[in-house]
Image (cartoon, rainbow, N blue to C red; front, side, top):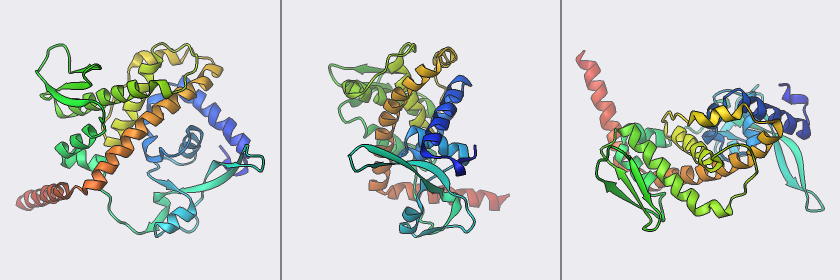
Length: 289
């Protein structure tokens, strides 16, 4: 794609064509995995960013990088996106602009402790951060069950989870159950489009879970039943499906921002100590070889 010469309208059209290709080629889960680092951008801009640059981490405009005491490296090419603004009549107008990835800049290298760091080095603190996102449902321990990993009681506003689950599975189940609970609370506020996808709300939840777990650093296998339906969708139905992707994005971003705020607010002092202890232990083991 030669984005350099494309107008805002042309970029919109290319983003929509690429979304259709992504859905029909079975690359939808891969698209969701790439969303968390650039979650503040629209679907169209996320697609355009990933078309122009691989493995983006954090994307900002030139002024924002300057305010963060980072400078865009000389010779770097900007990533062209669509910018929305209000016209004189109050109607939206679109123009193009440029952003740059963190890898294209140098400067302030302040370390930020991430959810992925917490998953590796501070599992209990991470689960506390996830549980904190369940503001209306109490998280309780459930007796080990051969049938269920977790149960939601809507009337009592409780989520019961089998805490003997393996580490990765436990986080998957915890994130899934809280996402379902949040979805139940906001269902009435979300828009919906009439498509031929069955269990569309379950797909929205599964999509949100994929994004959240990707942010934490966990590979998640989406329900393949949904993937099989995608190949039968018409182009117009895929365009309608963008509304559902937006619903999933809002659901996921609420959780992701909350988890990151919890980690940042608590500064994870004890987590940092654990990381330092882990690194010290690893160095000592290497020295003993």
